[in-house]
Length: 164
Image (cartoon, helix red, strand yellow):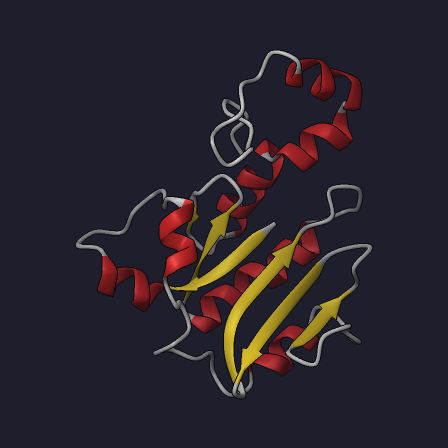
């Protein structure tokens, strides 16, 4: 699971671009309050993922719940969040290429489940994907679960030592 964050907002908040961002800070900031994606961002998403229905009237989805997806969440007609899921069970190269292009076009960086801030390149997203818990589980469920027995959990319930 990933989130797209406007690069300009990160620059406004920090004197230099961070490589990590504490989850508490991520949760507290209105990332899209003063910045919006380009007007044609929906066409860009549709170029690599079909739009599909969403259960909420406050969101739009490209892709599907069962595979790769991008969700745009809205409040008062403005984007408030871009949520992304890469399906570790499926071939992901073309999706990651589309995502990297989309993030670059929108002036975004990528925030990972392990609090990393990634550049919008195919290489950085792919590298993080191959380090993710989801990919490691799909690649070797038994080894992943065996490793969980010995892996401490942080105060948020996330696994320590399993870098994305």
